[in-house]
View 1 (cartoon, each protein chain N blue to C red):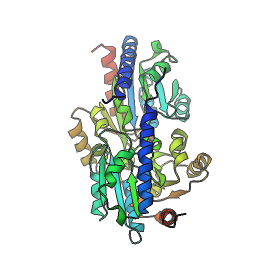
View 2: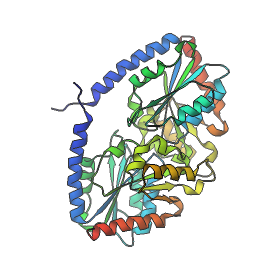
View 3: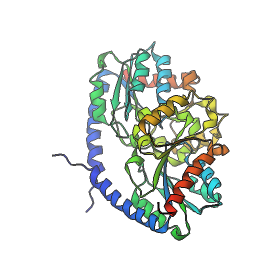
View 4: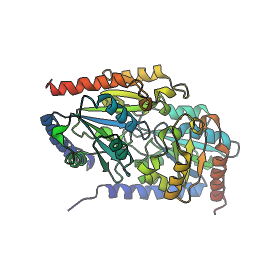
Length: 220
Length: 220
């Protein structure tokens, strides 16, 4: 006999994810789950996204980390509500953590919640949080071969952000090969090349996100 | 009642790790478990380490990845035996995978096995593989704040390699703060700043590894 120890955990998480999603839909709050390796620029991308959209939308951020609250502090310093979740060792966020985090947010006042998942290209892919879209960031220094090694995250992402694009000349990154492999894994996902800390290329990404937020608001 | 589903997995892994370690010690093969984020330069560091030590030692590499065999092919092209483990989704290597990999290697002929773990700063820290030392790489583009967010891997590493050091001027990386936080987490671990693809700084790291290999050979 073999006992699948993972299934009940995933099943329980999925049930809670459905509860989260029902609440997000009822309140008309679009929720984004942002996934990437450690140091790919998740927090910088969130700050750049906030700058692009804050005039139009009320935004909050849920920060997931093994430890520390440095990211939530960066977001709060930007004048945006931020809830820090410390997973205490766990390599990904789960729906019950999100449930507790949203209890600390004024859901009636919000249009958009960005969830920064734990830095990890593997584990966060298996856990629905109730989000409307999972999006991933790969940064140029990580190398163009990452879709070969971590195909699943590229397959489930609804958009791929290629960050630190301003450092392309410093690294041996084959953009053509990268885009071609991403497309072969995922025909639908657009790839947005950006430099989050410089704000370059963020407009196209913000437009994609705006379209998704508006689609939710119009019920389509 | 609460059932700890992780403990039996870790216990089983630890038992197999002891078997692995007994074999490594009997054969006098020093085994290194190299951990890092995706794209931190694990394979490049292994290639640079091979170049520094291949005249003195017989080396083999065990490559861990979710999917693909691109890393093992790079090592083989360098004239070094390489075994690729595809974890098929799992976010870390376990002792039974190492057991199967070493069955494919000529243990009597080897002095050093370098295990490249799956790119992940979290999960590989919990699994002993029977190795003599766990070493981690952080790359400059990932940022100096990573020890705050992923403290455990910095605590258990016996040495920390700071890779892509040649790109320090391109990124907002505070080396002084990084070294200070690493030391506060781990008084013992030396930090080696290297540029693996350029071979810079590799000597000091290779010397540290040589000392460890010789200590095993002399039975100290």
